[in-house]
Length: 291
Image (cartoon, rainbow, N blue to C red):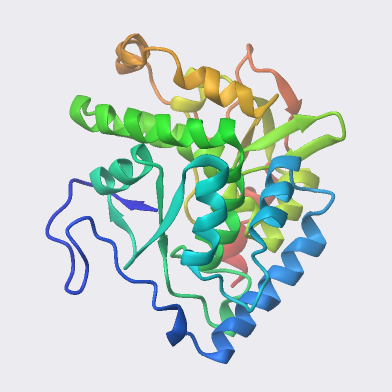
């Protein structure tokens, strides 16, 4: 979870790397109950919707035990599986701090949890989004390597002034990625798996476009931060992401410097189209027009 820009001084109570103690013992019974409610609702929904790597990671980390997970406990298994750990942060962190954590196999997660009346929508990522949504995939060795490589690439992108393009790769993969599997289309993006409504929308609604993953296409496509996505990009496997990060991005950035953005709902002649969406949801105003 990152906020635009280079790091200023960390807030009071945070260490130089913006980490804080999770303070697991301070969570109230009501806060643990929110986690349990969200966990049970999402796991019932995701058994036939999430990819195998996510479901295996969920089981491996036993995220349901005693409500909100204690980072110290889940880090033991996460370290054993892929060498990653979860660190608590006070909220969104600057980009350079975020990338440094990823490059060193640390995932920064907020410690607060949403209120009971916010179960279905929360603007700022909370611990349920960060831990339930992101951390199970970090138990997969290939995805774990991808995330580390992304952190390393993020540090270079900041130096080159091309973060906007690289951020789209994160958004359309780590946050809102879909995967084609022998069992059909499956979710792996944290922003989808942590949201009941988008878990349904992303796979079943006729509104969004679903397009085969192409790196430069993704890096030219803006995204929605305030509502369901108008386009989802579909990978063939987690190995696809790892292969993407093995190449030198410098020539890509040079090409993108002279290329216009692609409209968020636009389809190109060369797209591998899985679903040509109606865009009806966005045309009708989406979530914000309905609240």
